Length: 183
Image 1: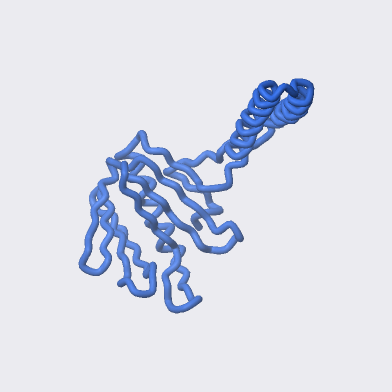
Image 2: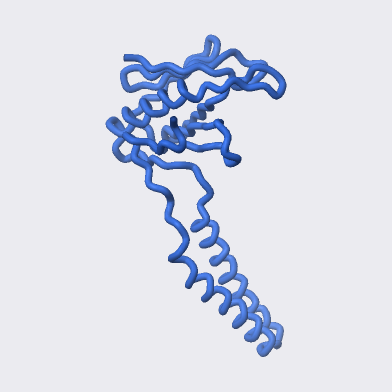
């Protein structure tokens, strides 16, 4: 059984057709055809419109090759056709077949990851505190540097205390995608 989805991505390009056939995702745009075997799938990321609209996108990574599939088709300047039901059928089929053929692939939902951003801020703050201390010691202003580094370290300790309460990345089951993303 072949599952197919078509959308026009850009104004001056022909309509793109994605077809899932026998474990291979085939992308056809005009006369150009690209084949992506799902056995080489390494990452599957499903994303939603941050404003709560019906726009969705699917980002697939096959080693170094990447593929993006969108749920809306371009009609004209500022006009798009909603094709979410056909898109969700293809996204579910790719997730199911990809989970079987590429068991090591990472499946996820593209959302704002507060924990990762918070960890980066903590790392930069720790680097800043240590750099402030080192530079103040080399400049002969040890008391000022120790005072500033201590204040920055206190903020860092408070951030470490808040870290366990930040949410983990949402779980994603490729055989049962979230209902809020795919109708």
